[in-house]
Length: 346
Image (cartoon, rainbow, N blue to C red):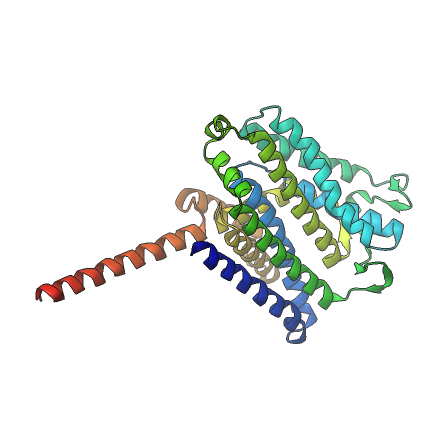
């Protein structure tokens, strides 16, 4: 019964997502679509960390590494080749390759969770400082300068596979981004419901016990780490298509911290919560920055402290738990009333 209900829910999510993806561009202005596309991209990035941290228990403070590698791989590829099919594949494959190499040394080296978080954060900072320093004209890949702290502007948007003359407009980028977000969400739900996903969650709960049952925890962690990198790399590709620009700030410590806050706000161990957390925080930051009420960084810091102290599980788990508690209370009350009625007790 539960599996049938989950399948029906995922089917409904897919149908609603497709309906919104194809209908909304005809109902709102282009400016709204551009803003929504940014939220979709960050929501996909949040899903990558929700899988790695929330379900596999891998404390990765440098998920922006794979996001940035994906964005730069696509940018340099499409500006050298002039057609986007191969660069999109590179934007997904290179983060996966980097994650496979980094994860091998981390997991098979038995690095503990705290040190793993520190190492991934340091790698992100190294990438940030490295890209920042490559600002001279002599630093280029192919014919494209890396740009250093100035970044790389004017990045071509994706085109129809094999047809570089048929590039996507704002509406099509929005549609593509939303379809991919829905596909990633449904794919992760299916993955976590499979035997593989159940083993991953078991390893998160008690790694030693899972290994005593015969599962290679290191291999499972490595696979999840690589899958998370692929999703983050895809988000990086979409990010470049959204803004036609990539710069070293995608590797910065501030951006890395933002991703952590998205997950903390939405709720650790949830996928829908990660999406909601990313959308809410990005909307709040944009609103505060536009209206110049207060520095968004101060607000994000306060939100993070409050959540850690008062709502450590995140907003979605808290709301779900309160809803279930209320339902149980109402059920007990109804049962008590029915029993009293049968017994003739007023």
